[in-house]
Image (cartoon, rainbow, N blue to C red; front, top):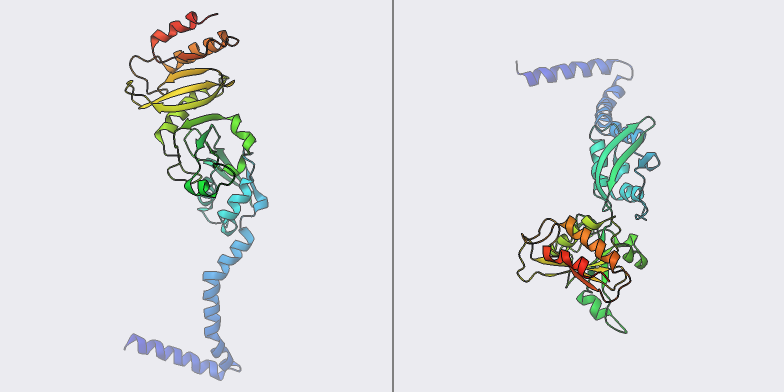
Amino acid sequence: MDSSNESQGIFDRIASVLKRVPGGALLFAILPALVLGYMGWFHYGAEHLDRALYALKKENLSLTKQPDWIRSNIVDEVFEQGMLDQITLLDPTSNKKIAHAFEANHWVKSTSHVTKAFGGKVSVDVIYRRPLAMVRVPPSESEELAATGGPAKDHFLPVDADGVVLPTSDFSPNDVLKYFLIIAKDARASSGMTGMQFGDTRITDALKLCSFLDEKSVGIKQIDVVPTMGSGGSSPWLLTLTSADGQRTIVWGHAPGTESRQESSAEAKLERMQEWLTVNADNPARLMLDLRDAHSASQVSLLRP
């Protein structure tokens, strides 16, 4: 016998029995709806119930304490932009989704841990990006055209040690002088986007020196980047420093790790520069020091008052 005919026969027999039972016709009529309703609940209703009962709530989300230089609320930003309210904590991939949402924020360098606790609480440990320098950027053509009452002004883009452009909205004009200033002719971020690398090898070299000098209290305000004019080394760029008082210039040479064979190491340059700045702190006649080669080491003693 054909199986389809057999199934149809069974269905007809069930229908015949139901019709003989009081109310059976009504039950027969609503049976398909009950089956469809169950299937709909199985596929969709349970998911919505899980989301309602186990959805991540912003008030249950805690984050590594923000450093002082970040003024925006990272939890608020990530919760909204990452649509974290759509995440159910029963999802086995929820930790990964939460981590990715935070790593998409421009201030977050990486997420180290996502931990769930009783009561739907979630703790996220992150490593924040730290501003290291400000890069001077000339006004764009549209800014030049829109300027009134004089030429458009240069502005500064905050970057971290990796050269990633940080949100300018978290900085005021007064914050600029708290960081190293990097000056390179016509420097412009290649991507033009916050959260992306600046994309200029001159800025990369300057940041290598900023990272080396950072937290050493060397009294340096500005780093200028210019071509080396064939002075050797693995980088085509020369770095020149300006002291915090704006009165002294130090020709540093190549960035740390890119020195020429004749060039002193970064550690030796730093030692000589610190001594020179200390010895000549009150001597306006000693305004320049060249640290590029070993011969310049003798300049420290020669420039003593």
